[in-house]
Image (cartoon, rainbow, N blue to C red; front, side):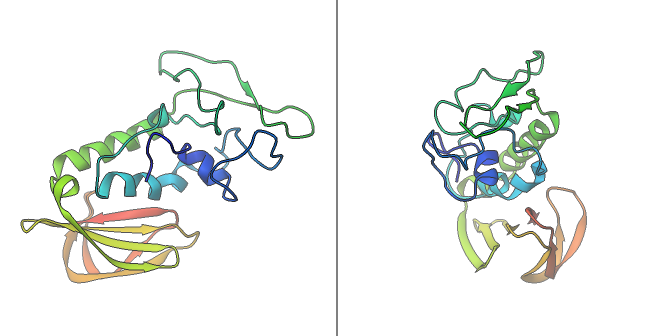
Length: 196
């Protein structure tokens, strides 16, 4: 779960060896992790907005900002109307300096807006109970329920598509609006499915 003391989700994804790092660690990558698609963080954000508690967004994450531990995350916000010079790494890695483009990420911003709208529309995501039905390897399945409605959340943190089991029935994918059957549900890699 992201909160005000967590690193940016992009950096967690790019640095799977450690959450916090010391400035002199040579294997840390606080530069842009955009070599991996934004959808790679889809599970993190989907869990943030469908789990228990109030989601907290770290300074600029909704704009697609990235950075390492202090002082790297303390950057000016990447407002849509502004342009920025390319940024050089500050992580003491040997070799020539490399530069990354810096700027507002509309695709990432729209994803946040969709998740906020989903949470606002369905009170069960804000106030309902939670029950985990599967936590197997990199697949997590849970339901949010309150006596009036039930929403199933299926998260795949792996690199290959997996199949999750939920009760049979007719469902609507709340992220796409597409109707689908329950039972065995395919979950794309590094993404999630929300069904009602």
